[in-house]
Image 1 (tube, helix red, strand yellow):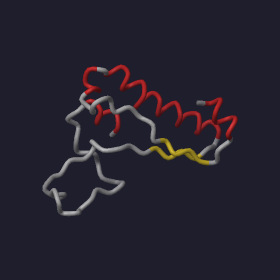
Image 2: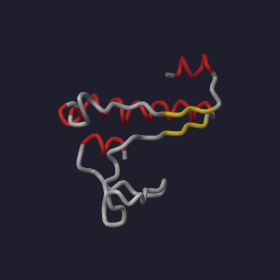
Image 3: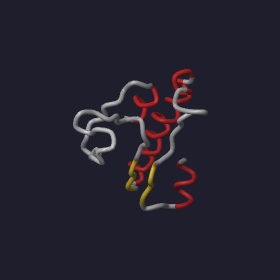
Image 4: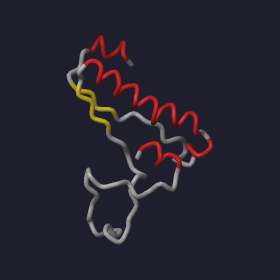
Length: 98
């Protein structure tokens, strides 16, 4: 939060926070308000605070935003790039992270 950022005075913030639910991301389907508060609003709050204070903020999300397809077959070792558009929108969690 802003208080911690003011106390620590970082030059960079690596934002990895988010909620996946327990036991898995299916929890997010039944808990959409909590998922939005953490994965969307929480992330935007940190980004906004960093922007206001001139602090570099890198936001990175975990899985469930990509799925194997014809261009990225399972087991091929062909990965996705930073510029790749998310192609997995089959869960609410994915929509909050992509």
